[in-house]
Length: 292
Length: 259
Image (cartoon, rainbow over all chains, first blue to last red; front, top):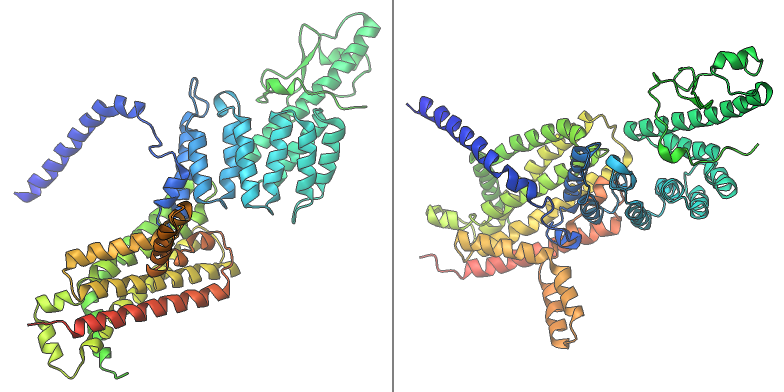
């Protein structure tokens, strides 16, 4: 009797639960996902298990970001409270500052578009972990890439280079940023540092994609200069790469970092091959060509 | 000290094992396995941290539950089952009986923690992390948890000498919570301008066991060194407080009318 009744009742309960879920889904969507927003209160109530709670809140932040990433119309308003709580509970959780800054600073569907909060988060991390040069690198990157504040970026990179274990290359980067902030090759240098200094595959992939885009943007600038020279000689822009080769202005077929040949548009400007997976973000177009 | 408490301690340990108290180890093992497999898939960059934090928190929480719920029944259960009378008819004094009961439960907690530590080490090994020198901090943290549990057991035993299990549980939990907020209580006093409140909060701060002293889970998860002096001071603090509680418990129990 019990062997039939127990599974039957379980099945009924499970069925009922799905009904309740459907009924409460709309309520759940409206409800706040962070009931307690005071990091200090949560820390007090953690009874010494604050580092475990920090891990839980960090996981929640990752899940929250992941659920909204690349979704049209999605907002990230709870990202800051989650990161605030996480880093208050465990001020040594470096990963939360580093990834959190990316989550907060990315624009559009990639993040909260709040570089100011990202800077606040990283500065907090630096105060709690003064020897962690990676955080200085991240702060310098935020100043450089998101705020276009090259003076602060140069100063931060220089400070990072003086910390224990930091690569000496950061001092060179600082000098480049101070001298030529906003140029393509300086940006390449900074993204290379990001690529080299990170172990996480997701950040490395993002850095690699940007490096490829920067290289493609640089190649296009170079090809446009050659196209201008072609126009000076023949009175019109080249229609294809082969015309540049025939004119003796190019030796081979230039390809992008993924091996796709560049093409020329009807406006006479070099462009990426339509088949190339490389995407050059809008904000890269504003970067200046390197000084000759 | 005579060897009289020894058989009581051994029997308390045996009884705990017979009561399947160590079954919590199975749950702990499942928790560790689940965390080791799942965490890499649902979070970023905290595989090792979660294993250490979750492992140490579980060791502490499981131990706490055992210390409180078994501790409060150490004396009252013997009275309820009327086994205490036949025991005290033996050549054993009441305080020796109490020491034996206390030692038996602490032994159970030590054995429990030992196996949990093995489980934690296995989980860390599973997430593909070689053991390094800074892992010694994890062992120090487990030692601190044991000191904390020894103190909680003494509190539970103390209340168990004159109160019902239900009330003893509430009192012990109350002391544990107050002990965790000890520094905040002192902080409240510092906020006020009243010298009277300041004195009262300061007295409470020094009177209640300061459980925050033993919290080193965060340090263990980040491999931060714990000063040797702190290990010594915490050991002494726990030993003194336990001694104080056991003396008080013996005094209460010796004068208790068991008829």
